[in-house]
Amino acid sequence: MFSRILVANRGEIALRIIRACRELGVEVVAVYSEADRDAAYLKLADQAICIGPAAASESYLNIPRIISAAEVADVQAIHPGFGFLSENAHFADVCRSCKIEFIGPSVESMKMLGSKLASKELAKQCKVPLTPGSDGPIQTEKEAVDVAKKIGYPVIIKASAGGGGRGMRVAHNEITLKSSLNAARAEAEAAFKDATVFIEKYHEEPRHVEVQILGDKHGHVVHLFERDCSIQRRHQKLVEESPCPVIDEATRQELCESAVRLAKAAGYYSAATVEFVMDKQKKFYFLEVNTRIQVEHPVTESITGQDLIQWQLRIAAGEKLDISQKDIRINGASIECRINAEDPDRNFAPSPGLLEEFAPPGGPGVRLDTHAYQGYRIGPNYDSMIGKLIVHRPTRDQAIATMRRALDEFRAGPVKTTIPLHRFIMNSRDFRESRVDTGWIERTRRAP
Ligand code: MV4
Image (tube, rainbow, N blue to C red; front, top):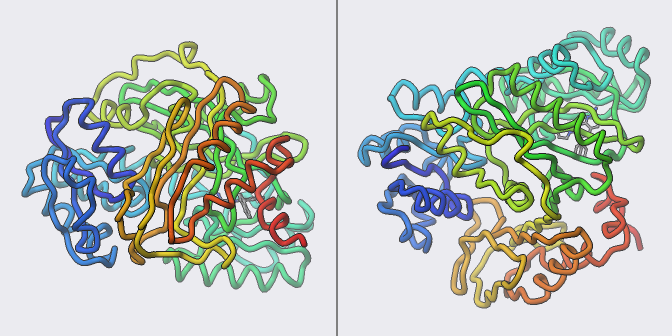
């Protein structure tokens, strides 16, 4: 195992990684921007190094500054957390050049899976179910029109270099298809310096289901079952749960095994998430692979009893993943609510400010991953997530009851948070009966 690593992130996930390091007996170096200099979790690290001003581009996204900190602190590895540099293959490559282990997958896996077209091609070879669409990139309007005629409207145009919903356009007919194609290409070029786009049949109001994978450097890959992340708005997940409450055992097996086939074919190591959409017939279709640890990893930790961050460190250090698939089982049900400093009544506008009151919930079955505390100031510089409330109970109904109880205990203000929205979701019949999809929040909140 490493003797010292650096955490190239902030907030809740930095704290989560620091905790994993403590438990593994690994010394940990935290970095912070000027905006985070008073962050309490920095005291839990062995060392904390300021890497620049508040702007992420000058601190948490600044590769030379992070590498300098790593060199000064003489660490053997860097954990990138999520967001920021976590899926930046160039950063992983720089780490490699500097003989610092990147706690994540290989540069080659990141590059390959960073291309949606390349990952779809690999998925096809592995017989992972794909949505009908163009075989490769779309260059001309005529190609787009021909593909759409073949697969039928509506269609979705996606940027190959995109992800998380960026650079996507839906078209319902030939006229909107032509303008969407040009808009999507321009957007992709501007955002990713890569105008490559492709077309797929558009699944309306699907569920969003994803499979957690772990692979080691010795070719062993396992899945840790699926998460249902259907409750989201504008590609920001709000609630995640595991297991998915609407799939049968046979479908689960197929879904999870197809994710393992793909990860094995990619020679993948570290943690990954294989994303799918699931239609009303409960058929699943591959979307993309996320090559990082995700925000919602705690629900998987809850139901499997595995520590995913510890595994990332152990795998990066070259250890064998000494758990076999049959030893990983689903124990109970887990739900996570993302607590954001946002105002749901003002279109989820960020709500920065002082947390004058912060009384977190606790008790049986409750986990709160947060770096916030009473007196913490939520700044305007970074994303608005201030914590994640996770419950774990023997059944889904019990998990919902515990979540409702925990949300009722939770006092946080006067900044606005998503806590009242989560109360609404947990109380809603649609959620309790699992009749939700990726459009549910927007439809439900618009209704009179
Ligand atoms: C889709 C889709 C429906 N049909 N592709 C969203 C993010 C990225 N991972 C891919 N995504 C989707 N791809 C096809 N062929 C639906 C989504 C999608 C989504 C789309 C619009 C609004 C919210 C969404 C939430 C999850 C997935």
